[in-house]
Every structure is written in structure tokens, then in C-alpha cells.
Image (cartoon, rainbow, N blue to C red):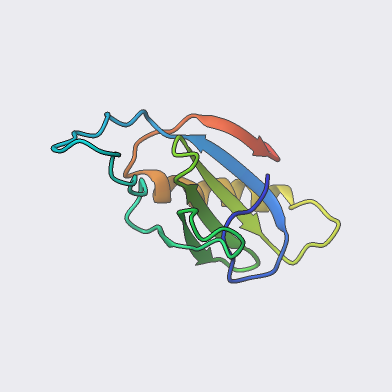
Length: 126
């Protein structure tokens, strides 16, 4: 899973979850023309520019935990998915099982305002 935008930490992604967002209603256009740009699904997401393509609209949120960092990423080019990354200083190793469960548990309250979301993909599964 490619990471979008710029993370505060340079630690590798050792676990990730891709969540499917509910369908959005079509925008109501008051005047002819292109629809307005989509807004991120969560208020905590902040703009996180992609240095190689300034036209891309990527939003991210990072939260520090004891030994790892949780990062949520939403890309307006792929608005149906919300990605959660677990970044930790584990080079060439897998995330321990206890931390995988803690990572999943940390993601749930952050996405709770949207509602229960189906998992589109994950590595590793809990």
C-alpha cells in the first residue's frame, strides 16, 4: 500500500487497514460547472500535500502511541477509501500481535463518527 503525503515520522508502515467509506450523495449544483472538491470524511483530517503532485488533495491525521504512530490518510482521488497506517521503528520485522490488536482498537474510535466501516483490506489481520 503506497503511503500518500508526508508523514511526520520516517518509520516504515508495519501494518495497515483500508476501510470502505459509505457512498456519498451526489453534490447539489446551483450553477453549471464542475462540482466542488470533496471534503474529507473526518474533521480531524488535515491537508497533507503530495510534494510530487501539488494538484492532489490528500488529508492525514497522526496520533502518537507508546511504540508506534497511527496515521489516517484520505485521498480525494480515491474518496471511497480511508487508510490507517501503523508506523513503527521495526525494520524488516512484523508488528507483534498485541500491537496489531492495539492498532485496530485505536482506529475504531477515530472512525466512529462515520459509523461502522467494512474492511476493504488489511495486513496483518488481527
